[in-house]
Length: 230
Image (cartoon, rainbow, N blue to C red; front, side):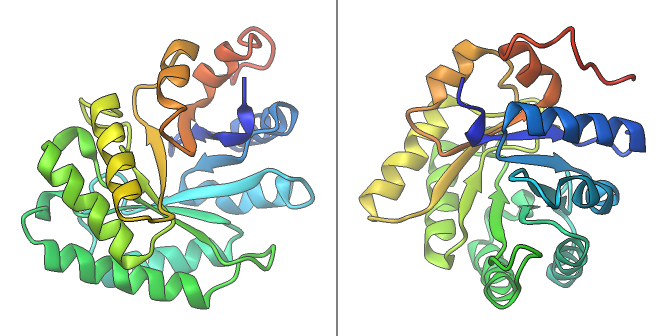
């Protein structure tokens, strides 16, 4: 099990400080890439993880994507100031017919990313959640092309909060589009990936996974050891 490509996820505003502490302690043991937590939990996660290799991911305009571009910029700046290393922004997928709007929004976010530094003195990693489960194949291809054109780091399949999450057909199309354009864009698969079988099916096509903490624990056979208390 390659935990180093997993964002160990607990996106729940009701999580307690004790839950976040347990999450971070397990993340260190599992050697995951990041913990992915709600904005309100970023500062606490930073205090726990700042001297470790585990990085901190959080979300912007989650889960609707309907915030204005200015609001997304403000959210992103706040997260970076609180210790986030990676930012997963939900774009306004309901505007998929307005490709100019979406492209301009991503250009603005990329401009912010290139001028900001994280607490580890790296540029933040910017992932764009396109909610591909709600898009057609053609729209998924268009979404991938916009992410390529604007220079974001990752295209991410889903918030995990809608009925359809990551789909192998859409991820394969993303990969083909990236290769066709000789792009360095990476793919994060998230939404509904809960088993080692699913993980193995996707891993040839993606660079990162967003998986809920309980599923990651189960895949690693530690589901009975460090469970969160809610």
